[in-house]
Length: 137
Image (cartoon, rainbow, N blue to C red; front, side, top):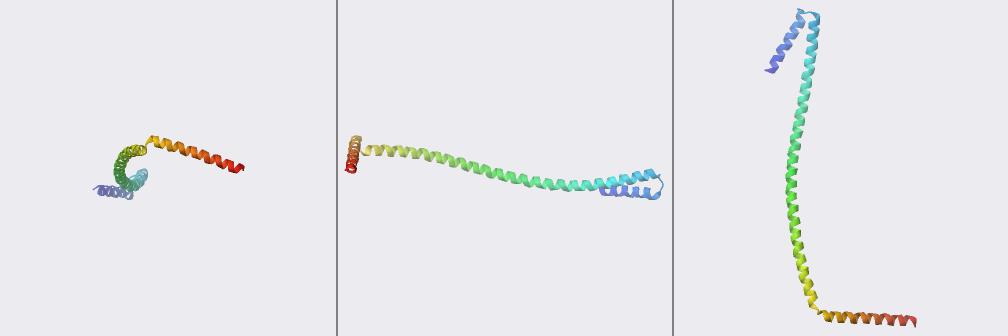
């Protein structure tokens, strides 16, 4: 419909130019407006193509963004679950270490440990003194 009205206007403009019924200034004005109209139509087609290309790019980017956003949300949930499981494991491990440390502490009576530790220190001192005497001799 729009194309038919444009075509009829072009035909009327051409008839007016060929007919010579109007003055030269009117004909020049018609030619100038026809050129401008053609330029505007070409620009409109170019802009329409650019708009369609940009619209398609926007749709693709929008889909990609939403897909990545969903993936990141899933990864965030996974990371939170992993952190919580590691915290739970840590508390259980600390509890087990405390229990094992208490068992180890009570495995050897402390008075025996202190006595043996003192004897070991004394024997090390004697050994060092003997080594010093041997070196001097």
